[in-house]
Image (cartoon, rainbow, N blue to C red; front, side):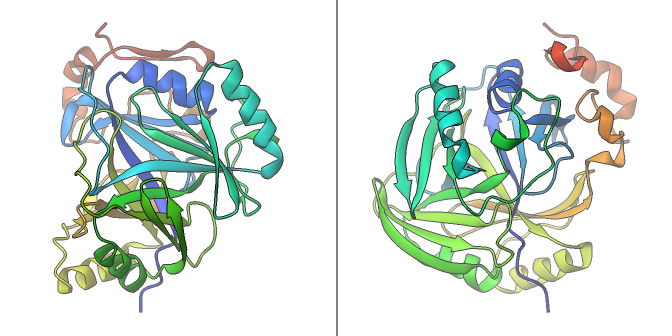
Amino acid sequence: MRNPAQGIHHITVMASHPQRNIDFYTQVLGQRMVKVTVNFDDPGTYHLYYGDRVGTPGTIMTFFPWYGAKRGQRGNGEAVATGYTIRPQSLPYWTERLQNLSIPFTTSTRFGETVLTLEDPDGMLLEIIASSKASPVEHWENGPIEAENALQGFHGVTLWVGNLKSSQVLLETHLGMVYVGSEADPEGTRHRFEAVSGGVGSHVDVVERPGKGKGRSGAGTIHHVAMRTVSDDEQQEYMHALFAKGYGVTRVQDRQYFHSIYFRDLSGVLFEIATDAPGFAVDEPETELGKHLKLPEWYEPRRTDIENHVRKITSPEYGITIGNRE
């Protein structure tokens, strides 16, 4: 019998400008860039990974930055917001930090917790949520934010759907999450589900918006939400169980740092189930994470062409210069 999903493994988003993306997530949010590689299905563009010091599952935000991509539109059938956790005592720090950086934000309360809502450079909704349930992560000591105020990985993700039913069946019955409750939301009714692990990245909120328009893919939209599983064997169990229930689940994909299967809920949201292993130190030491363009072995013969094609990205503070195209 497979275990329930352990929460969120990573969230993958589309962006338009790799350098602007790097500056925001490393310098504003204080995340470490833990891996620079390419989109395995389109090696002409980067795949950037951010997280805590070692890229712990539940802290990992990844981006496909297609240079010049048009902005997408939030709507039903997709994940629309990513929430990070902070300790409650860090709320004044983040309020002041966003104000000093001239980043607009709003403040609200949700399920008894204070939420700061802002947008990244491409318009994706980000939430910084003060929670007494904050789980400690591996602090990136070379980043711009001290340990006591650093982001503590994901709080969760918000989905927009036209009807709750299919999402509830998926989350409760097939992924083993627990229904927490509901409350009014400016967009409709928000329903919260929680992974039984209760750790980092354990929440999925589903906002039911009957009759509202569908989302349109583009820069600033979430491509998929990846849930965690503990082993390859358990992932196989998920694959067969989901297939038996009519989900169009893919075969296992080797993503170098984890193994993945993908499927789409009837609501339209694209999900992945990813393994924790082998992790980001499989092809470079922890001290060097994110400093080099790492390619899977099947793209290594094309390294020169790829480096000449991808846009130049730099992070002088951490000694990173990758790509040759201005």
